[in-house]
Amino acid sequence: MNLTLYKEMLRVNMKGIMNYACGSAFYILFMIWLYPGLANNTKAIDDLVSAMPEGVGNAFGLNSGFASAEAFISGEYYGLILVLILSIVCVQMSTQLMARLVDRGSMAYLLATPTTRRKVAFTQALVLTTALFVIMATTTLAGFIGDAWFLGGEYEFNSSRFVQLNGVAFLLFFAIGALSFLVSSISNDEKKAFGISGAITFGFFTLDILGKISEKMEVLRYLTLFTLYQPGKIVNGTVEVALVSLALLLVGVFAFALGIELFRRRDLPL
Image 1 (cartoon, one colour):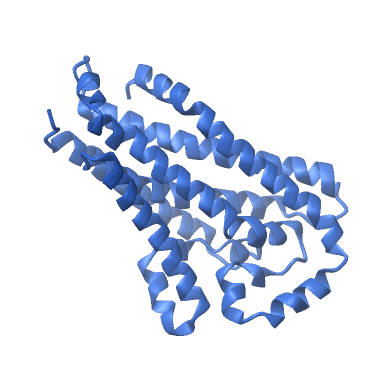
Image 2 (cartoon, rainbow, N blue to C red):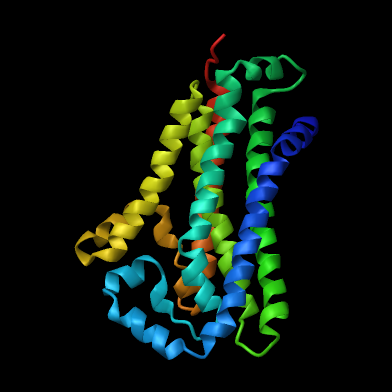
């Protein structure tokens, strides 16, 4: 790793990272603040959800129920809003860290310093991973603050499953970010890298939604990493979290390693 580059890239991107982290923290606090007002009407809400088409409830994680705070936020936040936030972070940052530098000629100047391509690419991958970790750590901390502040032990909040939920969310976007990084590592054009990474990321999410909505299209879920991410089932304890986490970790490590190696071997434009 190139420590100087790591510090500089974090400095350059820290404002954006913290904007996303604070936005995520604010939203989850808002969700937890809402929960006590809804907790006494969970039967009415569950009846409303059950009246919806089953596919809609599956697609947006509403079928996990609202009996606990983590079940509520798993459907209202982790099923859609957090996914969109971290998808944008992965696509945007991976492009900025690799393809943009190549496209604008900055990578050539960077590689003219006493360093290697492998170190540069590894450092940029670490910056992206750090950004995702900061956002998820802030979100997790905000969840515990919300529990202490708004729930005060009066409402059920399973801390261990909440941590598992955040851990799987981090590993999902570690893998998604790695795929975006791989695309960016082999691209000369910033806009093309951004478009391809976005198409892969949001295409995966769309396939997962379509597969959940209709049983006829359920096979589509096997074409996307999002099938491993099931917030409602995680908080209900019906998912093998360790197995899912290992699968996502392996995909992420492989994609990052491949991206670093391909960047090391490729020809860069003059």
